[in-house]
Image (spheres, rainbow, N blue to C red):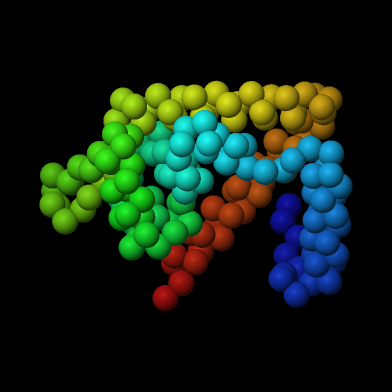
Length: 165
């Protein structure tokens, strides 16, 4: 059951828990880099972190509009245009116009881009498998349950924000 009484961004208990989580992440990072496993592939693929993330999102979810891709990568729509231009020039992706509305442009992976996505995806799977191997099955299940709950709550929050006038 969701505990909403007296809990919010200004709740001192949440702030305390956030500090403790940060301390634990710092402690873990002292022993093993918490660097984005995707970023470690940048040099090998000769792509920037934003380009790698664009390839990952397109591989994960298929063709995306320029606006949606910009939101997923965390950059502006103006910036995504240049990023997509460079990936297109390098042969990793192409643009396609929607049949029902020619103003809508979607980016999609090419065969070369799909190959890079498969390599990246396998690399991430390997890293996560190694990391989760440090936990016993009950702890892995508990972690999965907590992450599922967090994902569900973030989805609910996003849905409620869309409904606000």
